[in-house]
Length: 334
Image (cartoon, rainbow, N blue to C red; front, side):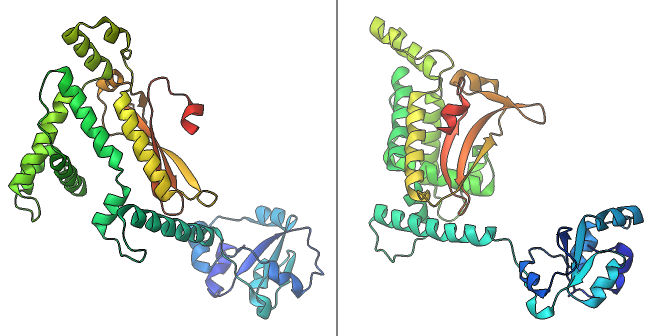
């Protein structure tokens, strides 16, 4: 610990450590291997003010701490206090091992993910993955099928024919990724006509899927009520979901994503995870009709929340749980 008024005469290569007073003044140089933390001149100046330590505080510290310097010049900074000078040959500067621990976990997770994606895409074990391979490897096949089922269910309820093909859905995903990369909404899609790789035909496919989504976008209870009124089937009426219930088809979509991402990115017995809440940037009160709970934010807005689990090493998301109405914390963590 250095007094600010004495820092101007201290060389940057000098380090000093603060130790507990239970070390006696007779400690020899063998204790030098236990040095665990240090600070440089620049680090100290950035963290401490001119009035960091007054005389009373310095005296109080002297009764509790021993100042261990790495040179006689450094020890002079603490005259009147309990000090000891370590031998230069025994000086060891140790770093926090957290980075090395996470690096080891990251290497294991990356190796596991690459192997899983190569097996899924039936590639050679040494094949280099490009961005298309990486996306295809992380995209569950069930996601596309369930997404198609959701579109079809909404159109069937309104007796509308679904004119969306598999290729349309793929092109929709492609164009949507471009929008996310440029951080613009679908209303700006026409601006991308001149971008290489996005043809007018692909834009037509994108708009076709988006129009289908507008028709299918309704609460599960509303969709069921339309089906009942259309068919007048009493058995169908009793089997429907209640109001403000999360869509079961969307639940299957999310389950498919969680299963695929957990298998691909999470290594059992090795990965550490971080659980966080991701608030959606939308304040529409209609979210409650879809079974989504709205949480009050710091800016006093109410937004839906997704509970996200990500690996600490690689940072890959391996699980997403939407915060639905009635969801309990224990169920979410399970």
